[in-house]
Image 1 (tube, each protein chain N blue to C red):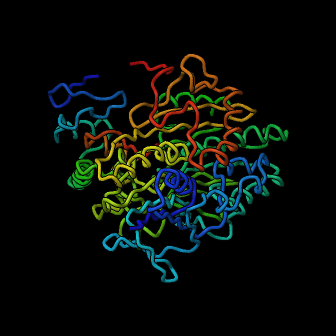
Image 2: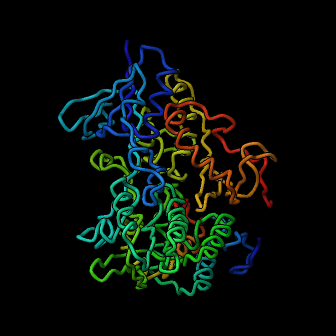
Image 3: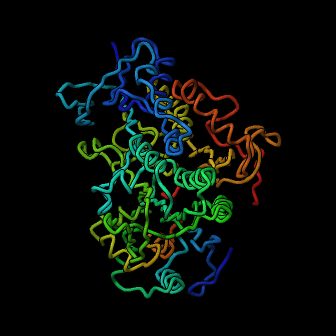
Length: 412
Length: 102
């Protein structure tokens, strides 16, 4: 009898899983991917759009281009998941039954969660760069801007790609310098964390870089509201920061689908086992990528590492075997620091980012937690790797799903 | 490292979070609170109870989650633990530094 796997979401994680599973499963399994969008965005590219490094068309491709033959792509809005009936119901009433469900619906910004953020000033003086529209609006603003105070703010954690706001600050510094107007721009980085990053060794390094680039950090700033008319943000403690341009990373939330289905947490992330990626909703529902509530970074590299482990676990589940609790929270992120340089960090649930070499111990060519041109080239090459290898579920050479300690300098 | 709190040697991280939740007691909590400049009241303890319950059930905490808990709203949470409420409350609760910041 034919069996069904349904994947919700054709972003990085969902597309990758459809490729993994089609290769691994025989024809008695049918695979369906459901998404409401027609475009697949290379989201790490949003960061570069405001500074004119990437044009929007370079980072957008049709979704169906990456869904393999033998997988059905359904375009439409998902209304609800019914775990007790093993089915998904669409907005138009159509139903899809499944034997296994994979939730890969990702995370989105929810600017409406911050009082006063939405309004006539949205995408005029207040911008996001986690959507293509926001990144393009910021680009257009910067092209005409003559200087003033630019405030970059993270509303609250967790957010997708936690290093992106810092990268935006570094790239803005380089951009204004390149345009010969750095002396006319005041850059402020206001964050709810107590430093640039929460992992101590990386924070030390990144705090230093902020200082070197004359970017003022305001730590422990928990935004309560935006006053668009007077161009001020206020935190819960009463502290105010004025701005001419506010670049916000608003509250991030999972898909509303979880709220409608009654299976998400208070910000619509799906409770998931951090080792196996099986959800706590039901044994035949798995989750991957930004949609889960596991304490790992919400980032494409994490989804990639999770993908190899989720594939293994789904194959085990199909055979009725025990799942492997293998996901270690591995993340690997380039941090663009401007002027053609970047840092690289590699970490997991238990090991914070440290210095060293990657991926070959003692050799590199990439250096961990240290600025280098080679790291920047790695970041730029990643766009090709993403479109050609990552989302189609190819194993990346020399990079293992689980973090490796070799080549790293740990103190203890 | 070790630190003497409430008359016992307690293992803490560099940032002063308890390494072993089992070493926690209300006296230890009150002493950490004092270091943060906070005098504990019933209101504070209600929040600490909630946070410890979530921790025991392995539920990752966020400021928003505490704000929606019904125990306290976000503004009240800030008023009780000024500055970094989740970090301070986690420290006083004897649980690790919030992991949602990754």
